[in-house]
Amino acid sequence: RAGDLGRALAKEVVRLEDSWLLFNHTVGKTIRSADGQLLVVPRVDDEPSLCPVAAFNRYVGACRDAGIDLRLGYLFPPTSPPRHLSLRDAPFSSSAATKRLTIYLPDEDLTSHGSRAGAAITLLMLGAS
Image (cartoon, rainbow, N blue to C red; front, side, top):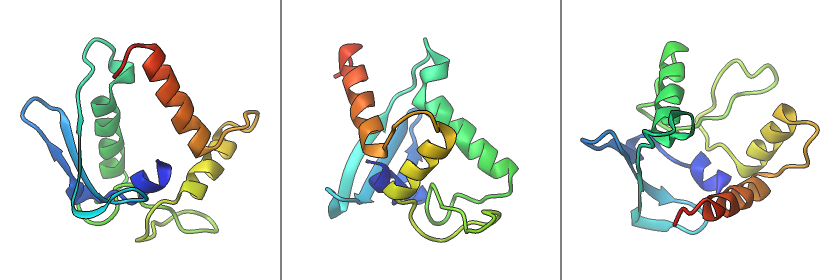
């Protein structure tokens, strides 16, 4: 869920020895416990353009290059209107994700929920479990 991902905190992500990522997400629509829910994100070495670990590393690197410290606070902080030149200490919302989709892909009728469902169906058709 975009809203759950928007509530992710940087301290919830750990890099494992094999370069995989471990998310221990503790707050979301379906997760409301101190124990959280563990999600292991493996590398996809045979298809680097689809590797979630490589994409995460690019995101963290771009934030670092822009002077954004992700070690504290939200992993995906929203920007402050009207010019969006600064970050807010708040979760990135599902509605903000949908708005960004319509900005980036104006000719498509996309929502964050529909994109999530479409991605899940595509992964199942490709044999993911």
